[in-house]
Amino acid sequence: MCIRDRPLIKKNFARLAKENNIKRVQTAVRADFKIGLKFASWLGLQNEGLMKHYGFDGSDHFRYARIF
Image 1 (cartoon, rainbow, N blue to C red):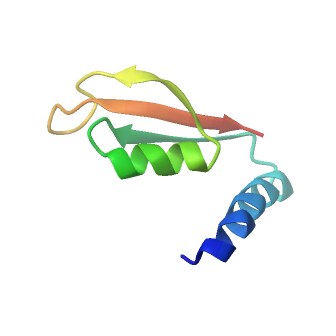
Image 2: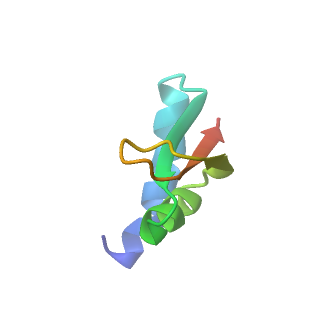
């Protein structure tokens, strides 16, 4: 991803959600996956809390979501 494309990705993420009548986007990100946590925040998703032992291997995950 080029640096110049970053604003375009964020803008189109919101636009696509609204055009398709999507009210909520959510994801679970493994608690020790720092790049994934940073990416979810960068997309404008908010951390809704820790889900202990959520992963198939017993790993903890954070729930991230964005309301449109």
